[in-house]
Amino acid sequence: MITATHLTKRYRSTAAVDDVSFTAQPGRITGFLGPNGAGKSTTMRMLVGLAAPTSGSSTILGVPFRQLDNPGRHVGVLLDAGAQHPGRTGREVLALSAHLMGLGPGRADEALDLVGLTAKEGRGRVRGYSLGMRQRLGLAHALLGDPAVLILDEPSNGLDPAGIRWMRDILTGFAASGGTVLLSSHLLREVEAVADDLVIIGKGSILAQGSAAELLSGTGTQVRSLDDATLQRVLEGAGFEVTPGTDGLTTTATVDDVGRLALASGVAVIDLRPAATTGLEELFFTMTAQHGREDVPA
Ligand SMILES: Nc1ncnc2c1ncn2[C@@H]1O[C@H](COP(=O)(O)OP(=O)(O)OP(=O)(O)O)[C@@H](O)[C@H]1O
Image 1 (tube, rainbow, N blue to C red):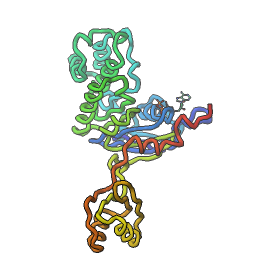
Image 2: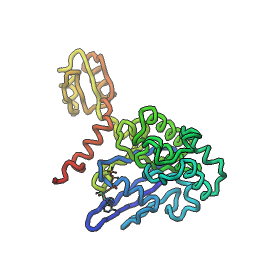
Image 3: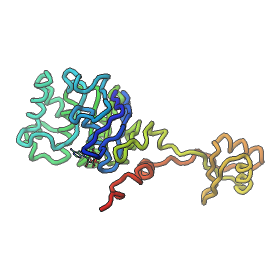
Image 4: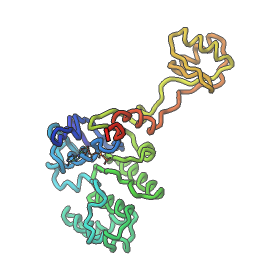
């Protein structure tokens, strides 16, 4: 579990992160979203002790990151795929960290294998790696200590579609076995496909948070009948709002309410369902409309 409690980070007079509180639960993937400059990386850096909060606090597995004994055995971190030493081979990067974590040398080869890097690729210097290979190496590094928590900043960046699907499977598998995943990404469809929970920030502040199902569910009901005009009158008479469309009516009434009222008024219903869910893209743009880069004066 990860908790952020009133986390705030100021650079001079600007708050890069402003009073951010959320939790990421075990067994779930928490998607962390926001436009460029929203404060995602700064928040993640504070969670792992790379930046000191101006105020507020955070814990991982119940304690501040800096108090974790041998943190790599508890938390896997991928903040910058370019962070690995370019002159080392992928395997050397992993073997060195494995050694520092007190793991056997064989763990580096296991980690390479986990992320689909071949032994030959592992012998290549990082400077020759593609961005996708660097991401895989970064993930191997994060998984090396068999942690319970993963904190990943844009892990799918630079991966091809097969790589993105592969990353999705790794993360869902990790969460299914009880791990906690905090995942920031610009790839909204990717987040939509994997996230159980969402935290959306803009200009350093939380704009929305909750389960993905809750945040993305539409409200109300869509209905088509053989007499929409009568059904609209009946629904409005019962105090519900109704919006006629090309494909029947959308109403604030529940499916049960609509069914009962249609039956009582003798209107034959030919289609009745909860209103369509909101896509993450729509939710994201609605939530961040006032908080993107576009409203920053040139
Ligand atoms: N070391 C720093 N000094 C001054 N300002 C900083 C520093 N680090 C970040 N900021 C500012 O804090 C704000 C949040 O930046 P941050 O990198 O956390 O956003 P982000 O959501 O990760 O953005 P992106 O999606 O572009 O990576 C930005 O306005 C950024 O310019």
